[in-house]
Length: 351
Image (cartoon, rainbow, N blue to C red; front, side, top):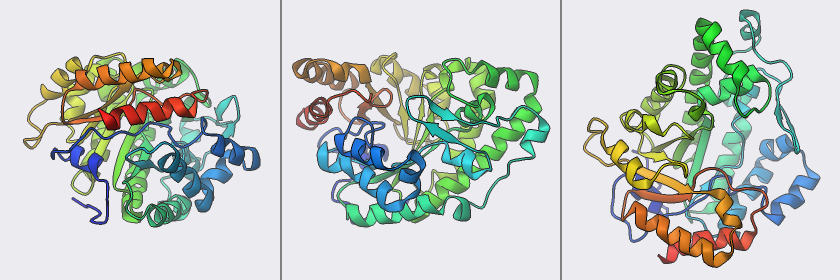
């Protein structure tokens, strides 16, 4: 297992590897970005993909929450949709609308338009950013790399835009299952190479984001999502700690724990006690307890600060000591005041 011996704060790594820590580590999904005034200034000057593809800008944005909020890990500023882009699809990110893929995949001919790329060529800018971030962090905290889960990426590649239900993506899987599996395998192969490239560039741990895993029933989650996540975890787990975050797919926590992932992210719709019971019911995973990450409702950060402090303490008590990384149950909202985000982080640190 690769470990950066220069890390001054390795609380998250220790938690994921089942080692004792003096306190619960804390970071926030989407911590680099939209709620920070310093980020908004850059957003006014550069387009989204300029921010992702310029290593200096990606580095600056990644470091902002370390300096401003004081979290225990940096997460690379990028986007899950750089993978479909690298595979040959046009991806636009339209402010206030979200992602747009103007030529979605619907047929076998469409699949022939895309490829499993050479990630060192197509995604070199991400690896350049990681090397620069690691240099600038200088061991202050670990750096989290990430990728979207194959199912979540398929949702965008088939639907062509964001959706609450991704009904077209689901219909594609049910009507053309062979094609769906062909596409999922191509995304998986690309994601494995991409995440291995992030690790080689210096990422200390990685998270797989399955934002739309909860749209599938348990059996379909296994078929169209988890079997591909399992391949990614298997390719990485001996080299680096891995976290799976499959929002809403809590009924599959035992199966996710059994992949050998070191951490499982959970949202606010499941009680920590229930999540722990489900995760621990998995067949023994090399004699260790999987860490749970979460699960504060991001909307609660809009409450008055004393309420945030009280609710965070309650969450920490419910998770108990050890094997927990404090986080939100999904990404931070753009309208959260910075001092409320700081209150969340500081309450965890002082608990």
